[in-house]
Length: 109
Image (cartoon, rainbow, N blue to C red; front, side):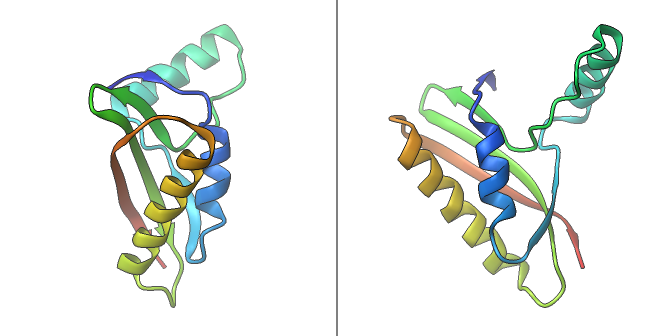
């Protein structure tokens, strides 16, 4: 993946607004998260707040998100709602095709 896009702050809000989602985790690969955290600390810049990873691919936008699901909600249904919220948000703000949306459940309960 490449060319991370700036609208992920708003996507974080859109995902957190989905019923059943209570937490966002960084969707970036562990190595990238460690490097970004180190660079943030060394340069004294504020930590990156984005949890939803959006990048441009040849086929269109690629979106990845890791969520925590609350008790009382079916994880599969929450994932579908998160997918739909992301697609709706991007269609409302971008003129790009969406190649894929990956929703990973990192925690239930």
